[in-house]
Length: 115
Image: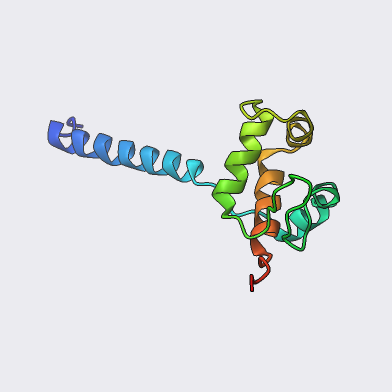
């Protein structure tokens, strides 16, 4: 049995490397959150953040935010990069999947129309 020519082996190696790189890149793509789970988890959030979208007592509205922005803010509270002990505690209890679910829920809500 003869050995495969070098160019064939190099081609196979390049193809395998490409497949591995593509698979790794797909693993990095955030999955969309489960909106129903987000609605379930939102109970604690809406005690301060009004689901109506109105700001109150210095607490910003969080409805209608893009999911990536919502998750990034929550992760920054969890990492204690943002200084708010209450939000650090709340965010610290959520997994990445739960944050994505909350982002899907709050992102699906429509901010009120301003007149």
